Length: 386
View 1 (cartoon, one colour):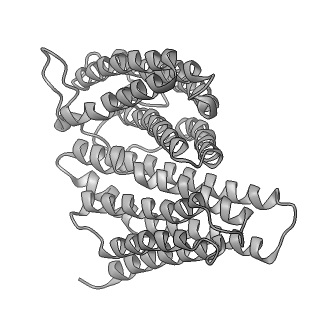
View 2 (cartoon, helix red, strand yellow):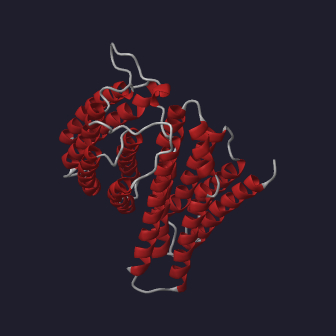
View 3 (cartoon, one colour):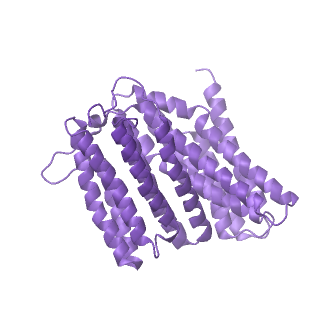
C-alpha cells in the first residue's frame, strides 16, 4: 500500500469517491426520518436516537480515515466501495433494526467499523498514526461483541447491550483509546487536515438539509389535494431549511474551518467541534424534517405532542448544536441562539396545554421565524466592525 497516506502540509481536497460514498448516507438519513415519523412515541424517539448515533459514528470514522489515507489510492477506493456496500446494508435494516433485522443491522455495522479499522491499520502500520489505528481497532472489536450479542438477545437485552456498545465507542476517543497495559493516544497524535474535516462535515449538513427538502417535497407531491394551508406549510418548511442553511454556512462554517486549520491541536478541535459537536446539528435537521412533514400533512389540524416536539424541538436541537459548535471553536456562546432556544422551549408547553388553538402551520411559522431571526442576529453581529 505504498503511497496510500495523504501528504501533510497542504490542504487536502474532498474527491469524487468521497462524494459517491456519501450517497449511502442520503439513504440512511431518509430511513431515520421515516423511522421517527412512523414511531413518534418515546420508545421510537429513543430507538431513532440510538440508530442516528450509530450511523453518524460510522460516517465520521470514515471521514477521519480519509483524512489520513488517500481516498483516490486504488486500495482505498476498493475499501470505500466495500464500506458503501456494508453501509447500504446497514441503512436498509434501519426500520427493523429493533425487530427482525436486528442481526442484519449489527453485522453490517460491525463489518463496516471493524473492516475499515483493519484497512487503516494495515495501510498505516509503519507510520506513527498506525498505533492509534490499532487502538481504535481494539475498541471496535470490543464493541462488536456487544452489538452482535444485543442483536441475538432481542427485547430489553438488545437495547441495553446496544446502548453499552455505543457508550464504549463514544467514550473511547475521550480517554485516548486506552487499553490495558498500553499507553493511550493523545489528540496531539491525531493531527488532521482541518480544512478537509470541515468540508466533509459541511457536506453532511448539506446532505441532511437536502433530505429534509426531499421529504417535504414528497409530502406535498403525495397529498390528495392542495389547499392554501398545505402550500403555505410547504413554503414555511422550505424557509426553515433556508434559515438552517444560513445559520450554519453564512459565516461560522468558514471561520471554524480556518480556526481548526490554525490550531496547535487540530485533533482536539476535530474531535470536539466536528466528531461530537455536529451530532445535535444533524439530529436537529432530521427531527425538523419530520415536523415539517407533519405540518404539511395536517396544517390546520390539532397539534399532537409529536407534532409540537418535532416542529419546535428539531430547530431547537439544531440551534443548540450550532451554539455548542461555535462555543468550542470560538470560545464564546452566541447569545442570540440561546434566546431563540428559550423561545422555542417556552412555546412547547403553552401549545400542548391548548392543542386546538394553535395549528401546526402556526407552529411551523414560529419555528421558521425563530431560526431565521437567530441567523440574522448572527449575520448582523459578524458584520459589525471590531
